Image (tube, rainbow over all chains, first blue to last red; front, side, top):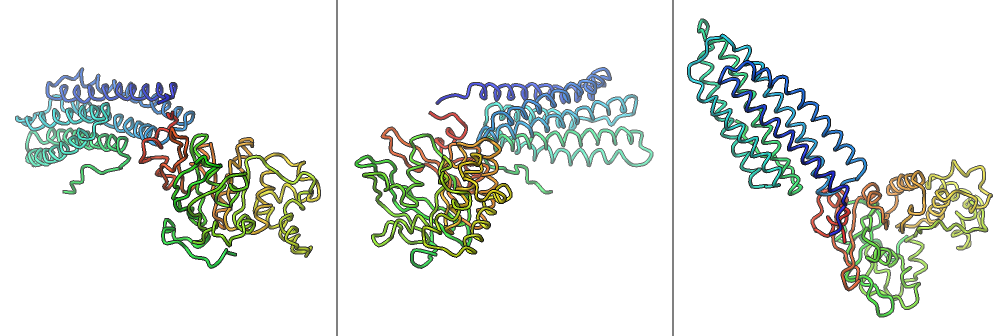
Length: 222
Length: 274
């Protein structure tokens, strides 16, 4: 098969950039969770500040993709890959925003009386981070089965979110000292839940590149 | 006007549109003993643009030339199988090839206006050849066809100047006007824009979109982006190592250019062929 040398190099560069963005984003989600559970204000601030670099990289990637599309007229799988690259870039940037949101909540939580047991939230954060990593692995390997597994994981995240919601609601009653922290932690849980949704979106795009089918993976309406 | 009665083939149900469709059945074409295209089964739906694409030597020009019996103009050339126009085989023994070429007009790669004729005479040449002498009918036809070919505004003040004095893009639209004047049912275009500059090319492409409201169009093009821009359906042809052209994949242009089913189509349209 004759290669399109320049075009193939450009496609590889776009993939590499997305992996760079994915790696930064994954680290940001992990750091936000660590900052929360270890009450590390400096780390939380680093997450918030670090989001600027992620936003910048997003524009760099979008610019590269636009240039490749304008100059190479991609079709078929190449076209699907570049369209997908655009939407994955956008999903990653939004995931990083959720991490930044958690980072900001860490400073709001500083000094507030906290609910004693955060185990559910800790494991939810861990699971969401794993989901994100798996969705990026599926993207790198163009692995449809792994992409579908990511969506299965999202059902579990959604269930866990419901549980945490119930638990934290109990702290909301008037007069309880954990009322404020409970509210903020609910926002944290919501941010994590959205990361799970967006990781699922990435998985959907992986399937689109591989098969040309646009599928809604997480169809849980409950 | 049809060869006999208008029948829409049962297999022409890709688009339920009134108008004239074509279809090939087990069509093979030869130059002497050399098989050029083999066993092509293809529907050209009515009032749609169908593009034939494929690398050089894949037989797409040969195929399109079988659609109005131009193929047999080459000495020793012949076909087997059928080409149906509205269900009637244009290769049936009692069919007049001249009549077929009137119903199925053709525009060629290089604009070929009659050099010694004016713009006006170029357009109505076919009618005059048929013996039409009514000046008003000729005038009306010239204006209508030049308007349909999006050329009227540019030539209405020089209708009696030489057709050869027009630009390349204008000449090609003049040839399209000439084709329209004899009221064809199907218009074949063999690389109609490959000798034109980009602006003239886009004009021809826009014109195709206008013409598909009334006519069935089939275009051969080397320019895949052009096929993607102008056509509703795309057929991809490829010659094997035996150098015989075959239809590899045929479907809605959108599917062919976003998610082709055959790896050979994918390799060709993504530019990784061969």
